[in-house]
Image (tube, rainbow over all chains, first blue to last red; front, side):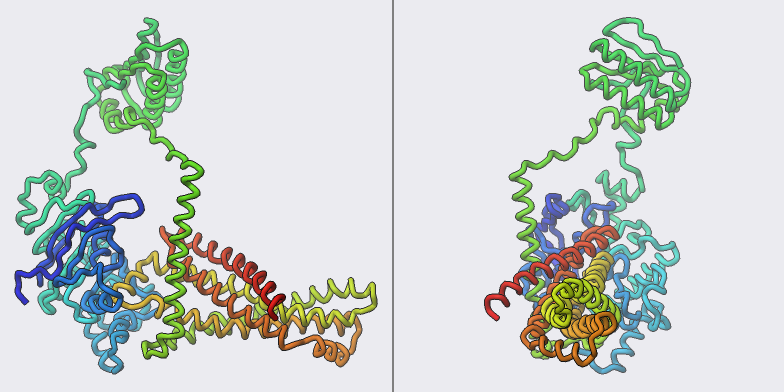
Length: 265
Length: 367
């Protein structure tokens, strides 16, 4: 496969919840093998974008092309085949609470036809060891900490050796050590398995560690795409504000109450 | 804090010292008096205000808005230091009028909206039924698998564990029905027909309705709550994100389990209800076991029993599909889960009674 052909192309994607416009016609490419970080303030539509890109939500308009095939026009079977090559790690891990850690990770392996029990168990243990939880297979999800759940979720998402992994908020709500561990894990997995990753986050440290390229969303539109370097040097105010961790201007600036008085009419 | 009001129609409120709750209330009183005296401009002089807390500021905002509403021009002058900083922080509250309550939709419009919402829900429900039927009855024969382990677990949960409560409630209902009808029958000296009444009543109606209500309360609510929770915690998304079918994993085992369990539970309920009649007939009405048994056999017909069993299958489908439908439609967090569960049980009971009526009519005319 030509390295320059994008593995995913999003074209004019429009998303809405009821009346509210969440994504306002956005377009971008994802190159094979890169880690693209989608960033932006809370509530700017990052997770919505991710859920559209894997077909969990149907767009109001636009196309999502995987190697040229439009996901929104796929029938159920084609979509299922595509999803086998995609891994998704959800914000909270989204582990099945009624199944053990090993069963969670083994579920896609089993469902996609690996009937040999020993092979399956070996695969599961291998994936769990990759995320540093080799000995936790028999535990239930409610016995795990938040960070462990995310790692198991990640193990499950790479269970089928996907080409593309979507990772929603890897480090949100974790302590710095755990967060750094997950970032390293993301880089390791990319190096070892050569997967393309789309990581949704707003944690600056994570972005600086893992991102090859960043895409910034603001109020449903893309306001920046480029490398991390370019982003850090960007003079787009909203991007600057994000990387400099500045609060919204309207709170700190504006008319002050002083001897000129305050007028209201 | 003091206030004065020198020039009419160009009013001035002078505020000094600390502005807290009480002082704020007094400012509003003062402003109200000015408003009632007629319009003009109002200036609130803050140059000697030394401190303001959030309640004080809220009173100030309240007073400024009241005056603005009456067409007065309001200015705040001379705030300094801490007071200026505080007011600057809340400055938007002065200018921004409180958001109006969303305009109430016109009657026609709201009816239309409801109708569309119902249509959408109906579409969802149809899709669910098609999926459920396919993954429960067709896919297993196409070699696309059935989750046996899940089915057995569901059978245990829905069926085996419900035997106790279904038995007890039907037995008690049998006693009650026998007791009530015995009082009536005794006026004509035909207490023996109580045996017939209990048998016919439980075969056609009481066992299946009682069991349906128990199962909807136990299992229908559990199904809705389980799926709703899974939806809220993105587990449903995770399943779909792996390209796996929610219907196959979660719905089909429940559909099959309840379809097996309900008729059996109904049969058990029937036996226990009739048992309740027996207890009353023998211990209270003084019949011999043989006499009561003979009358029971006389009254029991395969036709009546099969009516109850046919209904039990449909009630089972209502319970499981309503539960799944409400669970999967949930939005929001914990509150959504609660609402989905409530809605599922209410809909279950409603549809069970409606279906019962429909079946009564069908059986009356066609059987």
